[in-house]
Image (cartoon, rainbow, N blue to C red):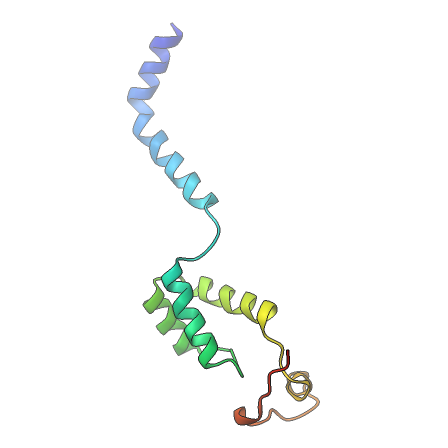
Length: 111
């Protein structure tokens, strides 16, 4: 009886079960972005290192070029700034509103 029931259920719902398995494994998949996408983002990062805040147009362009979602682009830049960018002291004060923002040529990176 059990085998007959299993076979009957698989015939009726086998296709749906397979697609659900794919859907669940897709959602669980997290990790690194594709290498080509990371290289494109890193290229933008290094050429804008003094002020690594892409405009909305930059983000759209990067999303189209990399094939990533805009949310992935935003998250990558947030994480990259947290991990690898420290603005100069004057930039930190300007961000907090204590000083006017300096001209981009005056941005200084400190290790």
